[in-house]
Image (cartoon, rainbow, N blue to C red; front, side):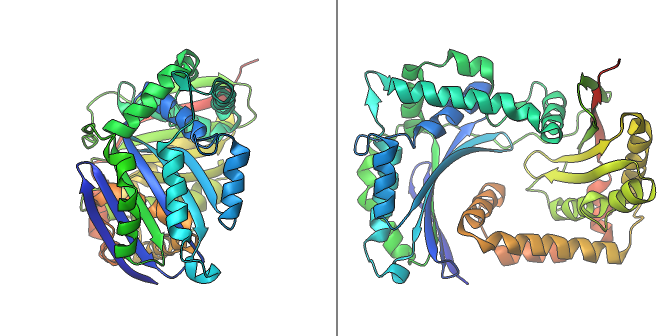
Length: 427
């Protein structure tokens, strides 16, 4: 169970978030660096996330670092980047056994000390990172970016967003791009690393069975590691989620594929801060969120037009997306029925049973995020960015307040912006 939740401001742009819970066998620290979303930032941060685990001045090889993790009862360090609306976030976490289970009072402090060493005590060679590690991680990141195209459904969704938000930060891919990557030098990445430490909004997060006062003392014991570097922070404004008055963009991309991918993007004028957000979310579930949805029952089962079909909402940008896997000649009919079902949502053509089924699905999904520390921390941090706090019961209350009237209001301004079709090459 969750005992308490606390947020404390440690310095300008530096906060500690603490969830005291005895639900898990392991505890977890996370450090999150919030950055503006640009091609350069996304590429630099993605490469840096890989470099952080390669070695520190204390543990100058991955092998030595892993030995230290083994000494800490098999603790795990992971780093990655995520895209939250128009913010790019580099995160690095350490998961370790709770002290009461292993009877070691020092494990929490030792885990935090190791995480701080990985974050703030990176291995340097000359004016940059160690050349061998840098070239290896640069190569691996390039292969991952190239491999995006292998998952055609994900690729099509990314391409729709690139086209729909062309000229907006939201169009940038979370991993960056190869053109930017190939120009990065080890020295430039080191300079970016220092800037990240000095000029980012930073969140320290803890989830586990240790009281907040002890975690605060543990974090502040290492204050000198980050306080001396702090120079300021980027201003990260909220996303523009307004509806743009323009003609629908229709994009067709031929590729050697056996199945077409139809992805449509809609602007809603409803995002995370809007009172209608939960209504939009539940409406999306009614529309295309599972076996009870309109898409599944009608487009997939009744009409046999698609192999899969679903809808989704991006809470930061106010995007409603629809995605279908179809035969190439089913494009027109699938699009027509999807838009018809959207109109049904606007007209209130759904039942109280539909609403209740969607509500149960959303609530069960939310509760399931608390099954594992890592997924819970990701969800917790998403909520921090969404509404500035974390109150699970308040979140559930907003979901239970959704009704037919609020769903219709949430959908009334939904406007088709972009249609993207990944189709087969013509003979």
